[in-house]
Length: 160
Image (cartoon, rainbow, N blue to C red):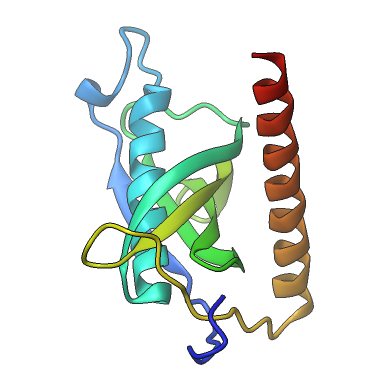
């Protein structure tokens, strides 16, 4: 985070999609890659809205598919910046199947996004204001996931 940029509260972005037959395998289950593409787009919008800058996905962490998604489902995707570094952000993304009277979470992940300037160099982002206990919990979880990812990358580099 840049001390010269005012800290801000992250807004939650919501996107809606239908699952069409071309989004699924022959058995009617949605392709995981298609679902990740929807999640990535929503994460990017949340990061752009927060940072006010161009962003790119650096990594996808802790993806969990917990409930099947099938042709005909209506999907609600939410994304919110939950952790901020100097030029990077962690965006929590959740996908829910709309059951009509309720929602069932089917997938969630954390996306590491990096903000860029006009020359495609990493650039500082604002600090993140955490207003609620839920915001603080999300921040701590994202920080832990980021630390684990950094450790894993160091371990993999040491093995090569």
